[in-house]
Image 1: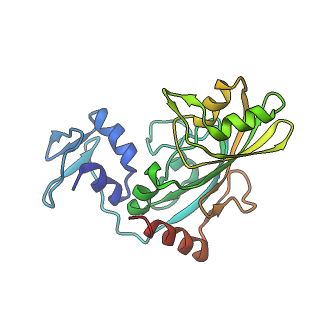
Image 2: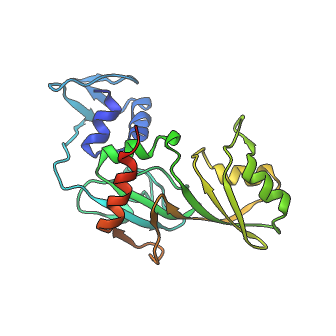
Length: 233
């Protein structure tokens, strides 16, 4: 099994976080520094920062958090304001994806490595909806350009749904997850983001969850989420 899949299934951290740890030389397999793409056999001993990774034998946990501005979506203990310390859940969990430090709103956390791996693959086209406030009035051309795609990071973003909500506020539904995508798209069109809030991931919404609060996913919404993910080939 590939090392990043192995670690994600223990519930220690996501595959993406594992890749960062590998690049930093913080993972070893049988005492040897792990390289990207390494495989783990059943008898191998894996350590992170010199500590053996505990297997995740606890019940599956699925949490929705309304993340405040300033919280960082990482499991790295040395990062001030990291999301794991903030939520302080009694068993090991980690965030599914990221929401940058300056943004707020919905993020999911779990100890289920399988669901993370499916949701993190952008080609699965999972809807993520945001409400965005910008620094000047939104024009028809801005809505059209955002919807059709904007050139950032040497690529043109995928077509998406954009709706003007008020003079300076719009909603956008992405099926893509480029780094700081909405902020970069707005900047490319001459706008500056003043506030960015994620309000939905697939069928999961904030549902009147106050800023800084979290809740367990309800059984019905979890079943819908899992059924959508299980349809992925």
